[in-house]
Length: 203
Image 1 (cartoon, rainbow, N blue to C red):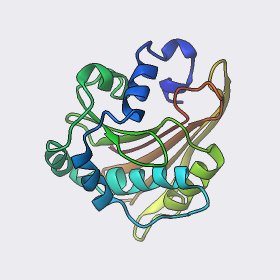
Image 2: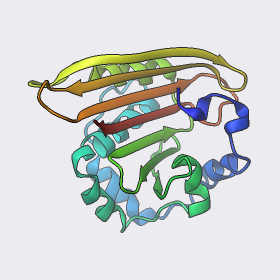
Image 3: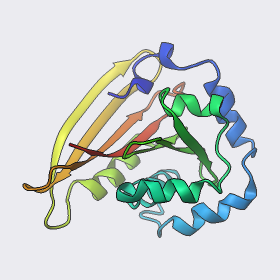
């Protein structure tokens, strides 16, 4: 399970301020066009919030997983969160985080430096809808890759309520590297974050 959802003690004092800072429109309008340009068509219009979360994950993290250096270069033109606000989303690692302008919620993309790792955070998202859309993407890999479920952890946490972390791995027998996809959801009303989807290349 991701450390974000384990305990209220892991939530820094400044996180609520950061999310409020993003949601109040402190992002610069000019980079709205960048994210709109890279988002694909909606997967499911029944739940716009989960749909936005999944679209950002698929079209920012998944689409660029093998070319994150190129994505980092493109994102240099996009205003990022200040370092002190990005630290939490980067789990203390060097890197950058960006608020994604979206009418359906508050979303953050975080990419640490020097790693093939990309994460999307959602302040609010319906767990069931997010899980269904995530599964739709990762549970069946395109040929010649094979998909394998590597984890499904459910827990009850003091602040975040019931949480679930699901992981899938895409690989081929001869390839040294694998793709790891992970989704963590929290359903507690007081959870600071209800969704975290990550993609990584692992060996």
